[in-house]
Amino acid sequence: MSHSHPEVAGYVDGRAVPRALVDDRIDALRRGPRSAALPVIGSSEDRQLARWVAQVVLTEQLCEAEARARGLPESPGEGPGLDQRAAVELGSIYAAAYAGSAAVRAVYSAVTQAVEPPEEEVASLRRYRPAVPLEELRGQIREAARRRAFAHWLDAGRAARLTLVPGLEHPGDPHQPDNHHRH
View (spheres, rainbow, N blue to C red):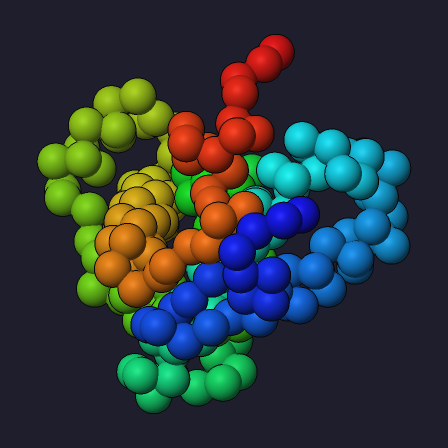
């Protein structure tokens, strides 16, 4: 892949993130149990995979920087797991970063610890799910609100603190040449 920063995957707070982190992650995927599902090397889809992996790595690096700045523990526990719905709510990049990085989970906990959904939201959903115990329903709504808050925090943090390099733009960026929607 040719781009103007062959050794750099992007910048977090002006600090270069080595491209090797992205390449190593892709190599691990290609050696993994789902390697047959990966795109052909050199194809448009392969370049999109590199962009996607770069976004995961940069999100992890952003959260590592934030965890250091907040003085969060290096091994914070696991945090809430992500079921399929939770992963969809976060989006594939954020869900992959959350699943693969203790720093992302630590920042998630720190950023979302005070998030509580409005009682009206609980009451409104209660009408559609009367069989679910109230505390369980409240917990489900709280976790969904926390995921939304975290995704918003990440969006703002990425916009303010990340610099992407040509060739590793976000895979959905309409200006990059491999972004074409097909079914």
